[in-house]
Image 1: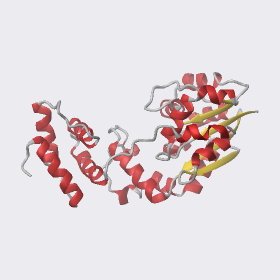
Image 2: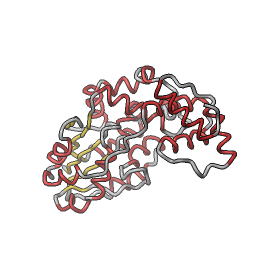
Image 3: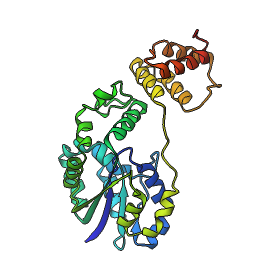
Image 4: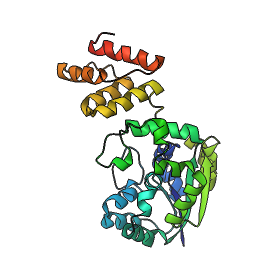
Length: 287
């Protein structure tokens, strides 16, 4: 039986760095018997988003194409954190899950899950959900307005905080015969390469680009409040500013819209008040 390593994240545990590394080193991995498939979908990183997308859209043609193109003479290495972040929905997908399992059970699957200490993980994932573009599906919590304590009580977030139980559920869902859990606070690069039996490549993984550090706590809080206004274009300009863009290209209309958004925000501590003054100065509001 062919072997597969199925990396499912968790989100905010270095998945992007891992995926860019695996894609950039496909040739070197293949020389050591590991095949990292070229993704079929465009995404913000070279992850296998087509697998998650199948559970959303039911495109069996794309799913079949993915699995049919896998070689028979190498161990397969697949990575997409959506298989963890959407686990609840996937567990309920019935026919689509059955179709996925028809393929995945042709492999001896080892599930790889990267973990992180709960407090830091929760804060980072909350920030990501605040920053995500809005979507019509409220269950995804994209562009959320929830405060951290309320975010932590959402069913899927509670599930993921129960790391051991969550990984076991994922293993059962994806028919994995074994699991490997790697905390990112350790030398996770060596642990992952040891798991893949490519120990000599650990240093190249350490040198892989890191995920964006992200916004400050003050920026995150102001953006959370901005989400509630549903002024999405002005919100996009706000995110640009938080990422260091001086916004010199704003039209007069864009500047007015941003000023109206800023007027809706309420600083709640010294840091957010300082950031508010910078924003007010930017758009010509009194400070």
